[in-house]
Image (spheres, rainbow, N blue to C red):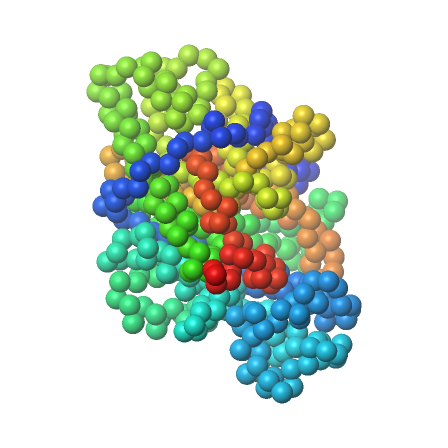
Length: 452
């Protein structure tokens, strides 16, 4: 079946329009009620920092001093890891003025004793304070302490197997010093690896004759998410952290998303109980499904249909103004029998369809991966999240292996197809809450610097 998926290519979703402010829910007044439930922060963090330093690796290969490389060198002292470079090279040997000196600096960072290219992004020193420097792990902990359960700040990281010792060496002392911290981790399961094919859609063979299997993308982490013991799960990427001097908007918006989710979840559960007891107002429920959950049926709502759509996991998704970043966004999607809200990647949209391209280009909002998920049903039992994924929203991407081109199959994205059959609320959050570090020079952006 996987081979057939390669032949078909990435399926397109039928977006009917981009989401506008009219589709957004207004944030609730912040309430501490969500803290009565078990909250866990889920942080996908399995990637190495190699891609973050891609332009610097290219510099070591071709020795061409691009604008990117020169910006990195010009601002070298401003990076939080500069002190590490000083220790590795000795300050008097750091030479920014010559070509050889600049190569030596980058070599020391990526290939020398620092070996930053091998590090997980979670352990790269990103922010500087008067008292020292911090990694994304530190910042996620600090952020979580501001809005998770005070006596049990629980974070779960997904990490790569090869980084396990580094991760534990870093995290274990933190938990020993802070009894309120509860940090766990898991790996992306090898069982979720997917077959790779060559450009003719035949299984990609290694030199030993074996077929190549590759990790199945972040959608494979649905298993990890499903295994968490939690009532409410906050999801945020490892590289989306900001300097603590600018964290107020982030903390406030997280509390707003959780408060809104609790409010809507209560209504959903009450409507389900009404339906189960045959004491319900179907028009009122229909209005709620239309107006709050933004699900519009093309035929008449029945009791059975209302139950099926209400009794699903709920996600509250923060969205930011579109700043031209690569990635997905919020759209209204036609599913045949109904339309609803979905987060879609550009690669899921038919770029040969002028109407779809216009919808994409006019999209005002962007998905920063800022989700608060409610994963228990009206009885308090855990949903089996695997039952709410849309397996037809997979991705085909082109990669290479040892210099040979191949096609890779990725599972439906964690917040795309893996949450296709969830109830969804969109809320606008401040752009200041979105500070991704896709390349090293992103650390020179305002969100990663001390606020003046």
